[in-house]
Image (cartoon, rainbow, N blue to C red; front, side):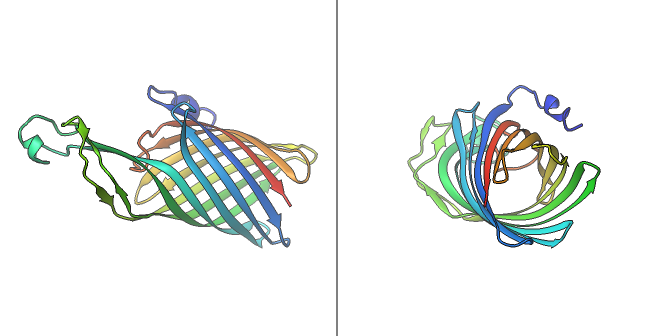
Length: 253
């Protein structure tokens, strides 16, 4: 079913992007480890930078089958907002019956940094050569207050020249990921597939990924993946359907 889902995503208006990550992990004890990861994402058919981020995390094994994790990431990305007329009583222009509800009203694009914190619990079980895991992650993202110099007015067909301040905003999300991996002793390549769902008082986003990790040696791991992302109801994403090609490298110490 996971392999068929990307086929359903081939619809008009879908976008393609790259998902590149570079990470390092340090195992301190048999139970405790920490790491750092930098990430770049692109969109608009690989031509536009969508996000830059750097994060740190730590893992602690509560049991052989259960792991507790926590992390922080600093995200930097362009933010895009398009406002529309909500109804015929929206404002003076709409009252003149010059526009209809749903017509574009204003547009603004600006760069902004966000702070993201997360806590996760992951349980897994081995079934033959397969490992099945379920990760539940609470994620909180805070966007600081931001003032923009002006916004584009579609009715006037010009920039309004008026500063506007967007208040700081926080968002809580529960991310649930079910994953299956094929692991066999002596096999350097680990294929996997997963499905992840983002919930914030309702399903907002879903991701479906297939890929493989190549253990080049005991310390170096190279990854290649394909990911399809569909946004159900999330105002942080203005183009919900995304296809990603993912490339990753991780160094273990």
